[in-house]
Length: 453
Ligand code: S3P
Image (tube, rainbow, N blue to C red; front, side, top):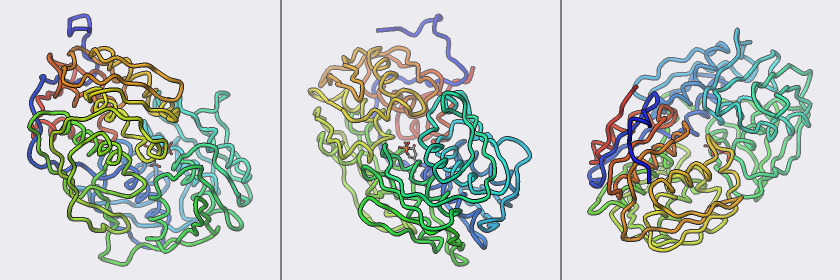
Protein backbone atom coordinates (compact mmCIF):
# COMPACT_ATOMS: atom_id res chain seq x y z
CA UNK A 1 0.00 0.00 0.00
CA UNK A 2 1.40 3.40 -0.89
CA UNK A 3 1.25 6.38 1.37
CA UNK A 4 0.70 10.07 0.81
CA UNK A 5 4.22 11.43 1.05
CA UNK A 6 6.01 14.53 -0.17
CA UNK A 7 7.32 12.25 -2.96
CA UNK A 8 3.87 12.16 -4.51
CA UNK A 9 2.95 15.84 -4.94
CA UNK A 10 -0.52 16.53 -6.32
CA UNK A 11 -0.69 17.43 -10.00
CA UNK A 12 -2.77 20.39 -11.15
CA UNK A 13 -6.00 19.34 -9.41
CA UNK A 14 -6.38 16.59 -6.86
CA UNK A 15 -8.96 15.29 -4.43
CA UNK A 16 -8.11 14.54 -0.80
CA UNK A 17 -10.76 12.41 0.80
CA UNK A 18 -11.06 11.50 4.46
CA UNK A 19 -11.76 7.84 5.08
CA UNK A 20 -15.21 6.57 6.08
CA UNK A 21 -18.32 8.70 6.41
CA UNK A 22 -21.55 8.26 4.54
CA UNK A 23 -23.84 9.79 1.92
CA UNK A 24 -27.28 11.11 2.81
CA UNK A 25 -29.89 13.53 1.50
CA UNK A 26 -30.58 14.55 -2.08
CA UNK A 27 -28.10 15.00 -4.91
CA UNK A 28 -29.04 16.53 -8.27
CA UNK A 29 -26.41 15.43 -10.74
CA UNK A 30 -25.81 17.53 -13.87
CA UNK A 31 -27.20 16.97 -17.35
CA UNK A 32 -26.43 13.99 -19.54
CA UNK A 33 -23.25 14.44 -21.55
CA UNK A 34 -24.27 12.31 -24.53
CA UNK A 35 -27.61 14.08 -24.87
CA UNK A 36 -26.05 17.54 -24.40
CA UNK A 37 -23.66 16.99 -27.33
CA UNK A 38 -26.49 15.83 -29.55
CA UNK A 39 -28.80 18.70 -28.59
CA UNK A 40 -26.22 21.24 -29.80
CA UNK A 41 -25.48 19.31 -33.00
CA UNK A 42 -29.08 18.74 -34.07
CA UNK A 43 -30.18 22.19 -32.90
CA UNK A 44 -27.45 23.74 -35.06
CA UNK A 45 -28.45 21.72 -38.16
CA UNK A 46 -32.17 22.34 -37.71
CA UNK A 47 -34.37 24.94 -39.32
CA UNK A 48 -35.57 27.25 -36.52
CA UNK A 49 -34.61 28.01 -32.94
CA UNK A 50 -34.03 25.32 -30.36
CA UNK A 51 -34.01 25.88 -26.61
CA UNK A 52 -32.14 23.30 -24.55
CA UNK A 53 -32.61 22.98 -20.79
CA UNK A 54 -30.52 20.96 -18.37
CA UNK A 55 -27.50 21.27 -20.71
CA UNK A 56 -24.30 19.93 -19.16
CA UNK A 57 -21.92 22.85 -18.66
CA UNK A 58 -18.92 20.53 -18.69
CA UNK A 59 -15.81 20.95 -20.80
CA UNK A 60 -16.82 18.20 -23.26
CA UNK A 61 -20.24 19.52 -24.22
CA UNK A 62 -18.94 23.12 -24.10
CA UNK A 63 -16.33 22.08 -26.68
CA UNK A 64 -19.14 20.95 -28.98
CA UNK A 65 -20.95 24.23 -28.40
CA UNK A 66 -17.77 26.20 -29.23
CA UNK A 67 -17.21 24.14 -32.39
CA UNK A 68 -20.63 25.13 -33.75
CA UNK A 69 -20.09 28.77 -32.84
CA UNK A 70 -16.85 28.53 -34.82
CA UNK A 71 -18.93 27.29 -37.78
CA UNK A 72 -21.18 30.35 -37.68
CA UNK A 73 -24.03 29.16 -35.46
CA UNK A 74 -25.43 31.74 -33.06
CA UNK A 75 -25.78 30.19 -29.63
CA UNK A 76 -26.91 32.01 -26.49
CA UNK A 77 -25.86 30.65 -23.11
CA UNK A 78 -25.37 28.38 -21.41
CA UNK A 79 -27.10 30.10 -18.55
CA UNK A 80 -27.99 27.73 -15.70
CA UNK A 81 -28.24 24.91 -18.22
CA UNK A 82 -30.32 26.89 -20.72
CA UNK A 83 -29.03 27.26 -24.27
CA UNK A 84 -30.72 28.86 -27.29
CA UNK A 85 -29.49 27.75 -30.70
CA UNK A 86 -30.37 29.59 -33.91
CA UNK A 87 -30.33 26.64 -36.30
CA UNK A 88 -28.72 27.23 -39.69
CA UNK A 89 -30.27 24.27 -41.52
CA UNK A 90 -28.59 21.19 -42.98
CA UNK A 91 -26.37 23.22 -45.33
CA UNK A 92 -25.89 26.42 -43.33
CA UNK A 93 -22.63 25.78 -41.46
CA UNK A 94 -19.65 27.89 -42.52
CA UNK A 95 -15.95 27.03 -42.62
CA UNK A 96 -14.24 27.43 -39.24
CA UNK A 97 -11.26 29.79 -39.24
CA UNK A 98 -9.09 27.41 -37.21
CA UNK A 99 -8.96 23.72 -36.28
CA UNK A 100 -11.86 22.65 -34.07
CA UNK A 101 -10.42 21.63 -30.69
CA UNK A 102 -12.73 19.25 -28.86
CA UNK A 103 -10.37 18.65 -25.93
CA UNK A 104 -11.05 15.33 -24.18
CA UNK A 105 -14.39 14.70 -25.91
CA UNK A 106 -14.49 11.46 -27.91
CA UNK A 107 -18.19 11.88 -28.63
CA UNK A 108 -17.64 15.35 -30.08
CA UNK A 109 -14.79 14.17 -32.29
CA UNK A 110 -16.46 11.05 -33.66
CA UNK A 111 -19.91 12.56 -34.22
CA UNK A 112 -18.50 15.77 -35.70
CA UNK A 113 -16.31 13.75 -38.03
CA UNK A 114 -19.42 12.25 -39.67
CA UNK A 115 -21.20 15.57 -39.83
CA UNK A 116 -18.18 17.42 -41.24
CA UNK A 117 -17.56 14.74 -43.88
CA UNK A 118 -20.73 15.98 -45.59
CA UNK A 119 -19.87 19.71 -45.60
CA UNK A 120 -18.73 21.79 -48.55
CA UNK A 121 -15.73 23.10 -46.64
CA UNK A 122 -12.56 21.60 -45.21
CA UNK A 123 -12.07 21.29 -41.47
CA UNK A 124 -9.65 19.85 -38.94
CA UNK A 125 -10.55 18.18 -35.66
CA UNK A 126 -7.99 18.12 -32.85
CA UNK A 127 -8.12 16.96 -29.25
CA UNK A 128 -6.04 16.70 -26.09
CA UNK A 129 -3.30 14.12 -25.51
CA UNK A 130 -5.75 11.41 -24.37
CA UNK A 131 -8.16 11.90 -27.29
CA UNK A 132 -5.22 12.05 -29.72
CA UNK A 133 -4.37 8.47 -28.71
CA UNK A 134 -7.87 7.06 -29.23
CA UNK A 135 -8.80 5.04 -32.33
CA UNK A 136 -10.54 6.99 -35.07
CA UNK A 137 -10.43 4.42 -37.91
CA UNK A 138 -13.66 3.00 -36.55
CA UNK A 139 -15.29 6.15 -38.00
CA UNK A 140 -12.94 7.13 -40.80
CA UNK A 141 -13.06 3.71 -42.51
CA UNK A 142 -16.85 3.51 -42.97
CA UNK A 143 -16.89 7.23 -43.85
CA UNK A 144 -14.28 6.50 -46.56
CA UNK A 145 -16.62 3.81 -47.89
CA UNK A 146 -19.20 6.60 -48.27
CA UNK A 147 -16.67 8.56 -50.32
CA UNK A 148 -15.51 10.92 -47.56
CA UNK A 149 -11.96 12.28 -47.61
CA UNK A 150 -10.44 12.17 -44.12
CA UNK A 151 -6.79 12.07 -43.23
CA UNK A 152 -5.61 10.71 -39.88
CA UNK A 153 -2.13 10.13 -38.47
CA UNK A 154 -0.40 6.90 -39.54
CA UNK A 155 -1.75 5.37 -36.32
CA UNK A 156 -5.33 6.19 -37.31
CA UNK A 157 -5.66 8.91 -34.69
CA UNK A 158 -6.43 12.65 -34.59
CA UNK A 159 -5.79 15.25 -35.91
CA UNK A 160 -8.47 14.50 -38.49
CA UNK A 161 -8.27 16.50 -41.69
CA UNK A 162 -11.61 16.47 -43.45
CA UNK A 163 -11.83 17.64 -47.06
CA UNK A 164 -15.03 18.34 -48.98
CA UNK A 165 -16.11 15.77 -51.58
CA UNK A 166 -18.69 16.24 -54.37
CA UNK A 167 -21.04 13.68 -52.85
CA UNK A 168 -21.38 11.06 -50.14
CA UNK A 169 -22.84 7.70 -51.16
CA UNK A 170 -25.14 5.89 -48.74
CA UNK A 171 -23.78 2.98 -46.75
CA UNK A 172 -25.16 -0.31 -45.45
CA UNK A 173 -22.75 -0.99 -42.63
CA UNK A 174 -22.48 -3.73 -40.01
CA UNK A 175 -20.43 -2.23 -37.19
CA UNK A 176 -17.64 -4.49 -35.90
CA UNK A 177 -17.79 -2.85 -32.42
CA UNK A 178 -20.88 -1.98 -30.40
CA UNK A 179 -20.41 1.79 -30.45
CA UNK A 180 -23.04 4.50 -30.24
CA UNK A 181 -20.45 7.01 -31.36
CA UNK A 182 -19.82 5.12 -34.61
CA UNK A 183 -23.55 4.59 -35.18
CA UNK A 184 -24.27 8.28 -34.54
CA UNK A 185 -21.37 9.43 -36.70
CA UNK A 186 -22.73 7.44 -39.64
CA UNK A 187 -26.31 8.60 -39.05
CA UNK A 188 -25.10 12.22 -39.23
CA UNK A 189 -23.04 11.53 -42.37
CA UNK A 190 -26.09 9.70 -43.74
CA UNK A 191 -28.04 12.97 -43.60
CA UNK A 192 -25.69 14.23 -46.34
CA UNK A 193 -25.66 11.07 -48.51
CA UNK A 194 -27.56 10.54 -51.78
CA UNK A 195 -30.02 7.92 -50.56
CA UNK A 196 -30.74 5.83 -47.50
CA UNK A 197 -27.93 4.67 -45.19
CA UNK A 198 -28.33 1.76 -42.79
CA UNK A 199 -26.19 0.82 -39.80
CA UNK A 200 -26.45 -2.48 -37.94
CA UNK A 201 -25.08 -2.72 -34.41
CA UNK A 202 -23.73 -6.01 -33.00
CA UNK A 203 -25.33 -5.26 -29.61
CA UNK A 204 -27.73 -2.59 -28.39
CA UNK A 205 -25.99 0.74 -27.79
CA UNK A 206 -27.35 4.05 -26.52
CA UNK A 207 -30.02 5.41 -28.85
CA UNK A 208 -30.06 9.11 -27.95
CA UNK A 209 -29.28 10.15 -31.54
CA UNK A 210 -32.23 8.20 -32.89
CA UNK A 211 -34.57 9.60 -30.23
CA UNK A 212 -33.41 13.15 -30.80
CA UNK A 213 -33.63 12.89 -34.59
CA UNK A 214 -37.30 11.98 -34.08
CA UNK A 215 -37.73 15.07 -31.85
CA UNK A 216 -36.40 17.11 -34.77
CA UNK A 217 -38.97 15.57 -37.13
CA UNK A 218 -36.54 13.14 -38.77
CA UNK A 219 -37.32 9.67 -37.46
CA UNK A 220 -34.88 6.90 -38.32
CA UNK A 221 -36.34 3.57 -39.41
CA UNK A 222 -35.45 0.77 -37.00
CA UNK A 223 -35.59 -2.94 -37.77
CA UNK A 224 -34.09 -4.91 -34.88
CA UNK A 225 -30.46 -3.86 -34.61
CA UNK A 226 -30.56 -1.97 -37.93
CA UNK A 227 -31.26 1.77 -38.16
CA UNK A 228 -31.72 3.61 -41.45
CA UNK A 229 -31.75 7.32 -42.31
CA UNK A 230 -32.75 9.07 -45.52
CA UNK A 231 -30.19 11.50 -46.91
CA UNK A 232 -31.37 15.09 -47.29
CA UNK A 233 -33.97 14.82 -44.49
CA UNK A 234 -34.46 18.29 -43.01
CA UNK A 235 -34.45 18.77 -39.25
CA UNK A 236 -37.01 21.09 -37.70
CA UNK A 237 -36.58 22.73 -34.30
CA UNK A 238 -39.23 21.67 -31.77
CA UNK A 239 -42.19 24.08 -31.54
CA UNK A 240 -41.80 27.30 -29.52
CA UNK A 241 -41.99 26.67 -25.80
CA UNK A 242 -40.97 23.01 -26.12
CA UNK A 243 -37.36 22.79 -25.01
CA UNK A 244 -35.08 19.84 -25.56
CA UNK A 245 -34.86 18.84 -21.87
CA UNK A 246 -31.64 17.06 -20.96
CA UNK A 247 -32.13 14.63 -18.04
CA UNK A 248 -29.59 14.12 -15.24
CA UNK A 249 -26.75 11.88 -16.38
CA UNK A 250 -27.02 8.29 -15.13
CA UNK A 251 -23.26 8.01 -15.69
CA UNK A 252 -22.70 10.78 -13.14
CA UNK A 253 -25.35 9.33 -10.83
CA UNK A 254 -23.41 6.03 -10.93
CA UNK A 255 -20.72 7.34 -8.54
CA UNK A 256 -23.37 8.13 -5.95
CA UNK A 257 -25.19 4.84 -6.53
CA UNK A 258 -21.98 2.99 -5.76
CA UNK A 259 -20.91 5.35 -2.95
CA UNK A 260 -24.22 5.03 -1.10
CA UNK A 261 -24.29 1.26 -1.65
CA UNK A 262 -20.84 0.71 -0.12
CA UNK A 263 -21.04 3.29 2.70
CA UNK A 264 -22.56 2.43 6.06
CA UNK A 265 -25.90 3.97 6.95
CA UNK A 266 -26.31 5.73 3.61
CA UNK A 267 -29.63 6.91 2.21
CA UNK A 268 -29.53 9.10 -0.87
CA UNK A 269 -32.11 10.37 -3.35
CA UNK A 270 -31.08 11.15 -6.94
CA UNK A 271 -34.01 12.94 -8.60
CA UNK A 272 -34.95 12.89 -12.31
CA UNK A 273 -32.14 10.71 -13.62
CA UNK A 274 -32.24 9.63 -17.27
CA UNK A 275 -33.24 5.96 -17.40
CA UNK A 276 -33.02 5.27 -21.10
CA UNK A 277 -33.13 1.45 -21.39
CA UNK A 278 -29.85 1.54 -23.36
CA UNK A 279 -28.10 3.15 -20.37
CA UNK A 280 -29.34 1.23 -17.34
CA UNK A 281 -26.70 -1.50 -17.19
CA UNK A 282 -25.35 0.05 -13.99
CA UNK A 283 -28.73 -0.41 -12.27
CA UNK A 284 -29.07 -3.99 -13.53
CA UNK A 285 -25.55 -4.90 -12.40
CA UNK A 286 -25.84 -3.21 -8.99
CA UNK A 287 -29.20 -4.89 -8.41
CA UNK A 288 -27.67 -8.28 -9.27
CA UNK A 289 -24.96 -7.50 -6.70
CA UNK A 290 -27.60 -6.91 -4.07
CA UNK A 291 -27.87 -3.10 -4.09
CA UNK A 292 -30.91 -1.47 -2.49
CA UNK A 293 -32.36 0.73 -5.19
CA UNK A 294 -35.90 2.10 -5.17
CA UNK A 295 -37.01 3.70 -8.41
CA UNK A 296 -40.09 5.93 -8.40
CA UNK A 297 -41.72 8.78 -10.25
CA UNK A 298 -41.17 7.37 -13.74
CA UNK A 299 -41.99 9.93 -16.41
CA UNK A 300 -40.78 11.19 -19.74
CA UNK A 301 -38.58 14.22 -20.20
CA UNK A 302 -38.99 14.94 -23.89
CA UNK A 303 -37.87 11.84 -25.77
CA UNK A 304 -36.10 10.31 -22.76
CA UNK A 305 -37.51 8.37 -19.77
CA UNK A 306 -36.48 9.62 -16.30
CA UNK A 307 -37.13 8.60 -12.70
CA UNK A 308 -36.00 9.25 -9.12
CA UNK A 309 -33.56 6.74 -7.64
CA UNK A 310 -33.23 6.13 -3.91
CA UNK A 311 -30.16 4.18 -2.88
CA UNK A 312 -29.39 2.80 0.56
CA UNK A 313 -26.43 0.91 2.03
CA UNK A 314 -26.29 -2.76 1.12
CA UNK A 315 -24.04 -5.75 1.60
CA UNK A 316 -22.96 -6.30 -2.02
CA UNK A 317 -21.87 -9.64 -3.41
CA UNK A 318 -19.55 -10.35 -6.33
CA UNK A 319 -21.10 -11.55 -9.60
CA UNK A 320 -20.23 -12.62 -13.11
CA UNK A 321 -21.30 -9.60 -15.14
CA UNK A 322 -23.60 -10.72 -17.98
CA UNK A 323 -22.22 -9.88 -21.45
CA UNK A 324 -25.46 -8.14 -22.52
CA UNK A 325 -24.98 -5.56 -19.77
CA UNK A 326 -21.54 -4.48 -20.99
CA UNK A 327 -22.54 -1.93 -23.66
CA UNK A 328 -25.41 -0.75 -21.42
CA UNK A 329 -22.95 0.11 -18.61
CA UNK A 330 -19.87 0.89 -20.68
CA UNK A 331 -19.02 4.18 -18.90
CA UNK A 332 -19.90 2.93 -15.43
CA UNK A 333 -17.23 0.26 -14.97
CA UNK A 334 -14.81 2.42 -12.99
CA UNK A 335 -17.59 2.95 -10.41
CA UNK A 336 -18.72 -0.68 -10.64
CA UNK A 337 -15.15 -1.90 -10.01
CA UNK A 338 -15.22 0.00 -6.70
CA UNK A 339 -18.51 -1.72 -5.85
CA UNK A 340 -16.89 -5.07 -6.74
CA UNK A 341 -13.87 -4.25 -4.56
CA UNK A 342 -16.17 -3.76 -1.56
CA UNK A 343 -18.38 -6.77 -2.30
CA UNK A 344 -18.22 -10.22 -0.74
CA UNK A 345 -16.62 -12.64 -3.21
CA UNK A 346 -15.32 -12.41 -6.74
CA UNK A 347 -16.61 -10.27 -9.60
CA UNK A 348 -15.73 -11.23 -13.17
CA UNK A 349 -16.02 -8.95 -16.16
CA UNK A 350 -15.26 -10.18 -19.69
CA UNK A 351 -16.16 -8.97 -23.17
CA UNK A 352 -15.21 -5.41 -22.27
CA UNK A 353 -12.09 -4.79 -24.37
CA UNK A 354 -13.59 -1.40 -25.30
CA UNK A 355 -12.61 -0.22 -21.80
CA UNK A 356 -9.01 -0.23 -22.96
CA UNK A 357 -9.64 2.61 -25.45
CA UNK A 358 -11.67 5.01 -23.34
CA UNK A 359 -10.27 8.25 -21.87
CA UNK A 360 -7.62 5.92 -20.39
CA UNK A 361 -7.10 2.16 -20.46
CA UNK A 362 -9.72 1.72 -17.76
CA UNK A 363 -8.84 -1.90 -17.07
CA UNK A 364 -5.15 -1.22 -16.47
CA UNK A 365 -5.62 2.08 -14.63
CA UNK A 366 -8.37 0.75 -12.36
CA UNK A 367 -6.36 -2.41 -11.60
CA UNK A 368 -3.37 -0.27 -10.61
CA UNK A 369 -5.49 1.92 -8.35
CA UNK A 370 -7.29 -1.02 -6.77
CA UNK A 371 -3.93 -2.68 -6.16
CA UNK A 372 -2.76 0.45 -4.33
CA UNK A 373 -5.79 0.08 -2.02
CA UNK A 374 -4.97 -3.56 -1.32
CA UNK A 375 -7.56 -5.12 -3.64
CA UNK A 376 -6.49 -8.23 -5.54
CA UNK A 377 -7.29 -8.24 -9.23
CA UNK A 378 -6.42 -10.28 -12.28
CA UNK A 379 -6.26 -8.29 -15.46
CA UNK A 380 -7.69 -10.09 -18.51
CA UNK A 381 -7.32 -8.99 -22.13
CA UNK A 382 -11.01 -8.08 -22.24
CA UNK A 383 -11.89 -7.54 -18.61
CA UNK A 384 -10.90 -8.08 -15.01
CA UNK A 385 -11.40 -10.39 -12.06
CA UNK A 386 -11.78 -8.53 -8.76
CA UNK A 387 -11.56 -10.20 -5.35
CA UNK A 388 -13.98 -8.26 -3.18
CA UNK A 389 -12.84 -7.38 0.33
CA UNK A 390 -16.25 -8.04 1.82
CA UNK A 391 -16.27 -6.76 5.39
CA UNK A 392 -12.59 -5.73 5.33
CA UNK A 393 -11.71 -2.07 4.62
CA UNK A 394 -9.80 -0.77 1.63
CA UNK A 395 -6.39 0.76 2.25
CA UNK A 396 -5.65 4.44 1.78
CA UNK A 397 -2.96 6.20 -0.21
CA UNK A 398 -2.34 7.86 -3.51
CA UNK A 399 -4.15 7.03 -6.75
CA UNK A 400 -3.25 8.28 -10.21
CA UNK A 401 -6.42 8.78 -12.24
CA UNK A 402 -4.39 9.27 -15.44
CA UNK A 403 -6.51 12.29 -16.24
CA UNK A 404 -9.60 10.10 -16.58
CA UNK A 405 -12.64 11.83 -15.07
CA UNK A 406 -14.55 8.67 -14.28
CA UNK A 407 -11.59 6.98 -12.62
CA UNK A 408 -11.03 10.03 -10.41
CA UNK A 409 -14.66 10.09 -9.26
CA UNK A 410 -14.82 6.32 -8.76
CA UNK A 411 -11.81 6.36 -6.41
CA UNK A 412 -13.16 9.39 -4.56
CA UNK A 413 -16.12 7.17 -3.58
CA UNK A 414 -13.80 4.32 -2.56
CA UNK A 415 -12.73 6.47 0.42
CA UNK A 416 -16.11 5.72 2.02
CA UNK A 417 -14.74 2.25 2.74
CA UNK A 418 -11.06 3.10 3.25
CA UNK A 419 -9.15 2.98 6.53
CA UNK A 420 -6.85 5.92 5.69
CA UNK A 421 -7.09 9.12 3.59
CA UNK A 422 -7.03 8.92 -0.19
CA UNK A 423 -5.28 11.33 -2.51
CA UNK A 424 -6.66 11.10 -6.06
CA UNK A 425 -4.34 12.83 -8.51
CA UNK A 426 -4.81 14.41 -11.92
CA UNK A 427 -8.50 15.24 -11.48
CA UNK A 428 -8.74 18.25 -13.80
CA UNK A 429 -10.85 16.30 -16.30
CA UNK A 430 -13.64 15.72 -13.80
CA UNK A 431 -14.86 19.02 -15.28
CA UNK A 432 -15.42 17.34 -18.64
CA UNK A 433 -18.51 15.50 -17.40
CA UNK A 434 -19.23 16.56 -13.82
CA UNK A 435 -18.42 20.15 -12.91
CA UNK A 436 -19.05 20.64 -9.20
CA UNK A 437 -18.59 16.96 -8.35
CA UNK A 438 -16.53 17.60 -5.20
CA UNK A 439 -18.97 20.24 -3.91
CA UNK A 440 -22.01 18.02 -4.46
CA UNK A 441 -20.31 14.98 -2.95
CA UNK A 442 -19.18 17.01 0.07
CA UNK A 443 -22.76 18.28 0.49
CA UNK A 444 -23.95 14.67 0.73
CA UNK A 445 -21.32 13.83 3.34
CA UNK A 446 -18.16 12.69 1.51
CA UNK A 447 -15.10 14.14 3.26
CA UNK A 448 -13.66 15.45 -0.01
CA UNK A 449 -11.52 18.53 -0.57
CA UNK A 450 -10.33 19.78 -3.93
CA UNK A 451 -6.76 21.06 -4.18
CA UNK A 452 -5.34 23.03 -7.07
CA UNK A 453 -1.56 23.03 -7.26
C1 S3P B 1 -21.08 7.77 -26.11
C2 S3P B 1 -20.90 6.46 -26.46
C3 S3P B 1 -19.98 5.57 -25.75
C4 S3P B 1 -19.58 6.12 -24.39
C5 S3P B 1 -19.23 7.58 -24.46
C6 S3P B 1 -20.40 8.39 -24.97
C7 S3P B 1 -22.01 8.60 -26.91
O1 S3P B 1 -18.81 5.40 -26.52
O2 S3P B 1 -18.50 5.39 -23.87
O3 S3P B 1 -18.85 8.06 -23.19
O4 S3P B 1 -22.37 9.70 -26.46
O5 S3P B 1 -22.39 8.16 -28.01
P1 S3P B 1 -18.69 4.27 -27.64
O6 S3P B 1 -19.61 4.60 -28.73
O7 S3P B 1 -17.25 4.33 -28.06
O8 S3P B 1 -19.03 2.98 -26.95
